[in-house]
Length: 89
Ligand SMILES: [Zn+2]
Image 1 (cartoon, helix red, strand yellow):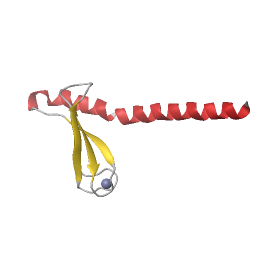
Image 2 (tube, rainbow, N blue to C red):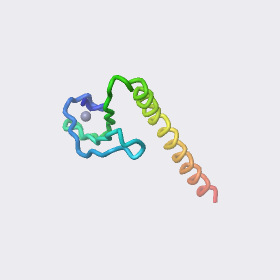
Image 3 (cartoon, rainbow, N blue to C red):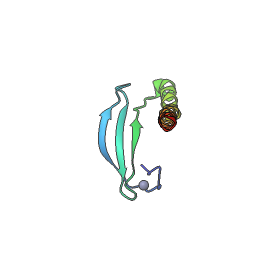
Image 4 (cartoon, rainbow, N blue to C red):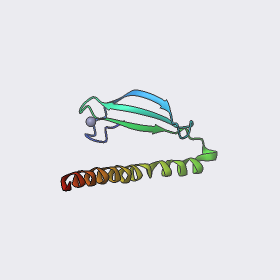
């Protein structure tokens, strides 16, 4: 597994568990030996008869980062608003 940050191929598994959302998925946390970054990966066993359904599942999972970014930006906006309100007082 290549590190998504520095592209080093030396990223080892530091934790492994079943997904809380779907126990067919295995979520692994990996740490890059080269740059020290950690990142999750998702493993999905695939057999040919249900390949199409599982590809759908993977696509839905890929939508997660965009949703997470939106959630984080909402939280940051709220925090910034709080600061502005404190400055006005
Ligand atoms: Zn790295």
